[in-house]
Image 1 (cartoon, one colour):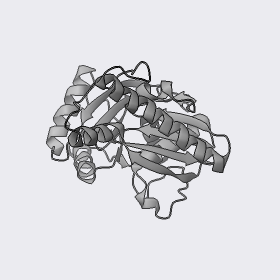
Image 2 (cartoon, helix red, strand yellow; image 1 turned 135 degrees about the vertical axis):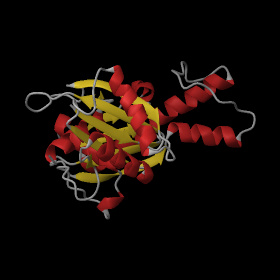
Image 3 (cartoon, one colour; image 1 turned 90 degrees about the vertical axis):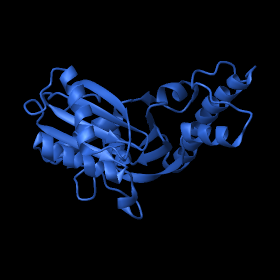
Length: 263
């Protein structure tokens, strides 16, 4: 079985894939289980090990017997080091860490390819495998990113804007009269209360942002397939007009593909 770990700035997503015959036909094919934990840069490798061990035990998985591979993407360097140490020490495996020098199948057309986040490259590899190109990948996480790949699977670049939770946090910090609200379906665009107005502005506002960014990218590339991922995609995408697919496991699938290329 393959353990895939996507370390984001706010949350870390862990997936467990069983081996499948031939090439996987979807991102969730063979996905046995997944877990989401808060990312803490000060959590040690041993503490991460306890968490992962507990998750696997719940599934009846013995990590010293049932796991035969690990793939990691991370945008938090300290956690990258801890995860690598965890795998080497406890699993006795050499992890595939998505970093410079690792085969991804993606040509990166960026001024400095090393600046591109590992999760964005994993998304590009997965999107090309699942949808071909040209494709736009929208990731609604700590940051909201819009990236594009060409018809030949080349990573062309992207756009980054502060994520929904960062924007809301800044608003509540600066506006004393506003209080935090639950992120939920906003209902009518004209809210009849402060909380409803906040939800409307966030959800419809980010949906409009996605549509605007996709439209500008398609002015350059022509019509593209648009796939959305990230923890808030299920909330925002139903109110956008430009997204063709929601794929919550896009990054995990990309890690699975990268692992196969490097083993």
